[in-house]
Image 1 (tube, helix red, strand yellow):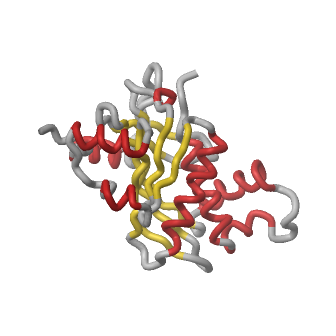
Image 2: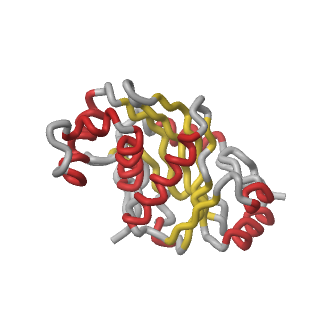
Length: 220
């Protein structure tokens, strides 16, 4: 039986991208520093592009915060942001769904080839997006941490990964929020303007989901 969970070395490599500047690769990009607006660092498999995924299932995120509702809100925000990106078809699997309960799809689980094939057939998709909300803090100090990855169900490969914290008090996040507001929202919220993102949990989560989606690039 083959284990197809992401190895410790791969997990370490993803975290290492938070410390080192990326190296440009041919074809799909590998470890990356994104241009604003987007999450600062992320991983793209250099050998298999996201365009190879016909349909992906977004599994409702695990939640390590003390706010139960945020898991559903973040999952929904990611679903909507990725729909707009149109990288692949999408299905959402909630933890209350019988499919999740039968398959027990968790971010750090280990799956055999047979289990991956069973998941692929059950969910009728080519990949799964799984992850964890590592922290969440609402207004007045909005912050969220996410650890996410997309796993190809045909070969068990890691296609994409991201681990980051967005903190509304951080200057870099603040600038990203301003750029997002100006490019995606702009009119209708004067005089509060981009401060809307720092006081509205739903708008803040939309901003974070937008940044996540912007890292999912495909080969032209």
